[in-house]
Amino acid sequence: MRSLASGFVAKILMGLLVLSFAVWGIADIFSNFGRGAIATVGDTEIDARDYQSQLVLEVNALSNQLGRRLTPAQTSAFGLPTQVLGRMISEATLNDMAKDFNMGLSSEELAKVIATEPAFQFSGRFDRNQMNLMLRNAGTTEDRYVLSREALETRKQLSESLTGKTTVPNAALKVFNTFTYEQRDIDYIALQEDDLGEIEEPTDEALQTYFDANKIQFRAPEYRSFVVLKLEPGDIMDASAVTDEDAKIYYETASSRFVQPEKRQMQQILFGTREEAEAASEKIKNGASFDDIVNERNLSMEDVNFGLLTKEQITDPAAAEAIYSLDEGAVSDVIEGRFGFLILRNAKIEPQQASPFDEIKDQLKAEIAAERASGEVLGIFDKVEDERAGGATLKEVSDKFNLPLREVSAISKTGELETGEKITDLPEQETLLSSVFDNEIDYEADPIDIGSTGFAWFNVTDIIPDRDRTLDEVRDDVVSAWKAEERRTRNAAKAEEILAEIKAGKSLDAVASDRDLTKQTATDITRRGGADLPTPVVEKAFEGPRDSKTTAVNGTTQYVLQVVDVTEPDFSPDALQLENVRSTLNRNFGTDLLGQLSSAKLRELEYTINEPLLQQIVNGSN
Image (cartoon, rainbow, N blue to C red; front, side, top):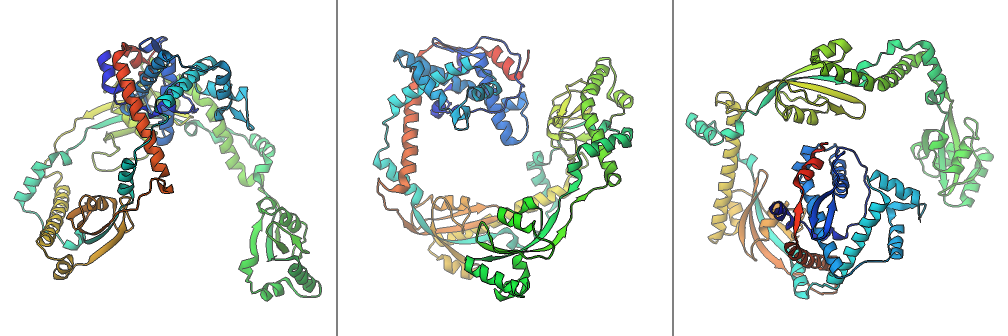
């Protein structure tokens, strides 16, 4: 067990020691696990429940980033179980060190720290109900959180006492300043593959040689055939079973949904001062029209017309009240609005309109049927599971409950059929195909969740192993690949020829002239890049000193480069632009020191990992 831990513990970044408590939504993919210590470090035990809680937090965070729920297998593939356990072992090591130094904090101080936790605030103040809600969502209790937070704060004391005054030397800061802000001027020629013209057809011998060297590129993947049975509300809803009376009751209950509110076409002239607005209003009262004022102020109707708006859509409350108090065609007095003084015209009134029941009756019946079907899904799910437990095939279940059954023939794990067609419309396709390829023929696998309202069952019916294709099967693809490779090779060779010429003393201008190419110059380029050159090219340009010559490639373009000037930045240790760099380096220096100390301490301690319990939690088994 010790050897298992030693491989990854040394790789854990210690920067997570002072992490803030954060709360994420919790799902129960890791539940019903055994109690006890998942690992011990010296005299400190890492409780399995704490490990499970931390692991689920990490799983949820990554799931939210990816936009899909991770399975236990995917969780392991991302390395989350190892990362979380490694971090907790590092924390336990520091806890043990803190005990040796008799570090800790009083109950009063701990209470103050917890009371200032942002996640527990409501209306700007600590709220115990909010705290209990957050802890419940995080799958932990108040007692366990208090112990965990006390250990965290103690580790922070240890970290700050050992590394709080660590500062980076000015010499190191200067290196980072030069690396970050050094500027270069670069002459270059860009060679586009498309400029090479048409590539001739390969000879049979050349094509065969290329194919033999790249067979894996054209290898046929494993294909599988399966049937999938789907259950969603839309599969069982029956709008014909909804009566007109049911639809009428629903229509009357939710009548506000089917009413289009009144709208008014608001036209507005904005004035900078009340005096200007009052003068214009007086002209209108004496016979001038709203349009006359618009023209007088060199405005167009597009400038003043705000279109048909509901009262709620008008953001200026004073304008909303005024326009909805006017008759159609009427002009307002001066209104003091949010952004100045206004004169409004109500150009048109579109009355409130209710959609007639007969016009939307079918829509209402479909909504009612869908709602009823949602409530019936779980009942039918149980019936399907009972039928499967009794030995029924998915075809028999489909026939009995009139559920859609789909046959999928020879599909790869990426969703491509053996014919080359790409499939994208399978339910929860990525999860479904992953499960299909994890199970054998006729194995009764667990159903797949379709969102939060549906399920899918599948049965693998055939497996076609991956294999090498023959040249005749993929000749067109091989020819295209050969031409693409030949184009890259010839373009790279051309770049190397030019590089050899300028290294021999010929100027880039002369080479460009002789070859009918264009020499370009990128100025003031830093390692962070510039608009003229892509990142891979900039990286190559900073590999050598002034007057260095090299080539670089980005996509289908080869670059021949010459560094014509290098400008080192001014350096002042107190420069404002270096504050973030200094802070980061100080933090990293401290982290490295603490990490080395923790690793040395860990080597002294007796530690073990309960691997069976670890696998039990990760796999979500009972």
